[in-house]
Length: 309
Image 1 (cartoon, rainbow, N blue to C red):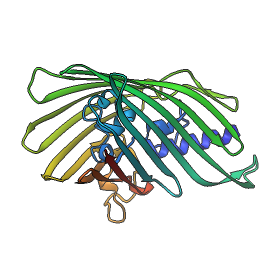
Image 2 (spheres, rainbow, N blue to C red; image 1 turned 90 degrees about the vertical axis):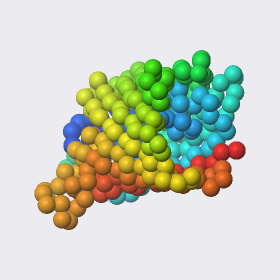
Image 3 (cartoon, rainbow, N blue to C red; image 1 turned 120 degrees about the vertical axis):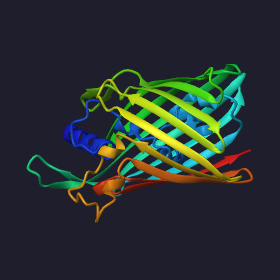
Image 4 (cartoon, rainbow, N blue to C red; image 1 turned 30 degrees about the horizontal axis):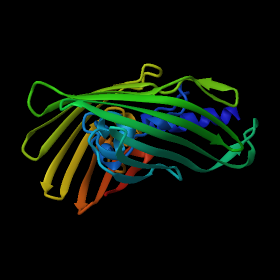
């Protein structure tokens, strides 16, 4: 069973970093972002996080949110898929949020120590989150989220807990805001005799909205436990009253799925690291889409449907 854990960790690491290596940390699925809007912006979202997606990226972004529900489906590689659902509402003098993250690896083939087929099995990861945020003045918002983690491989399972926290504040420069987020603070995750730290992450970002119809976001994210750092940049252009066009770049995604086809004629290798998408609104409904190429690994497509009421 421990070999299955290592193989699955390596598979998620490959999907996220483009390199096959033994993961230093556990629960690698926590590195997969939530929401098509954030994905289209290259993961530069801590300073722009708002509504239900803020439960994952920066709970401080919940401050000022009304009641809303969001559902996101991500088609990853082979049979793997990632789903995220979240709800926000006002309460307790601030804003509350709840979310569930689910990663399914699809049907997998087991192998024994001799490399022979040992039958099929399935595996999945899940996180349940509860968050609270409040605005302490017009320039500062703080938020915190606690989450329960669960992983299952075949007939064995493990669980754990983690904490996220964040802040967002206005800077002296007009239309410029900054954000700080900490994700996955918690004890080591134990599973079938395997014990490893959670993928602790620190994010610092800034967003600028001083250009007509354009929002620019820059963010850096470090993961001290495994060195899986990234630099993200995103831009959102309001093309019409109900339509936003988005694009982004992520340095970590740029390493994924590097192809031997250096001319990029048979793959989207030259587009690794880039992302694009759009958001469309109709009354209280919002639809977001994001496309992220990963070279030879394939392409990740995210679709988010949100409703405010």
